[in-house]
Image (cartoon, rainbow, N blue to C red; front, side, top):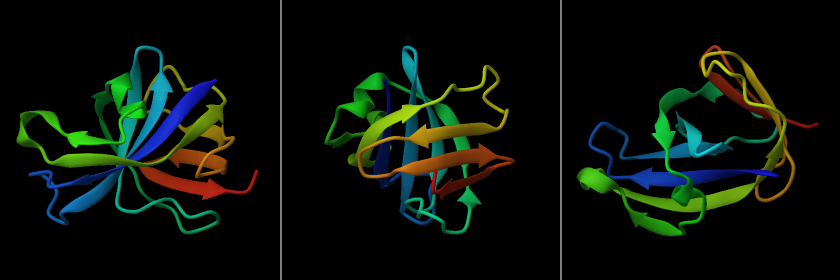
Length: 119
């Protein structure tokens, strides 16, 4: 079963707010990743999801660690498993079911927006 994680990332030099969240979805030998301003809220309003470079799988395991290259600190704050398929093209709409863990529901990422609704 594929895994997901949400990391709180502080101190990133390219983040004027000083804190954001990285949403990681296991995809083979790496994780597809998006930057979110806040934790997705079940049935909350959608929020911008900025695609990031793939992250290493080890971030699904870490509790917290310094980010390489002096790019701040990341701490895993939520994790679990998901079902569904990631589209071949990372720019295509994504719909997955977060099955267990801290976030549960239907995760959608499309047109640069992320939302979480009941399944």
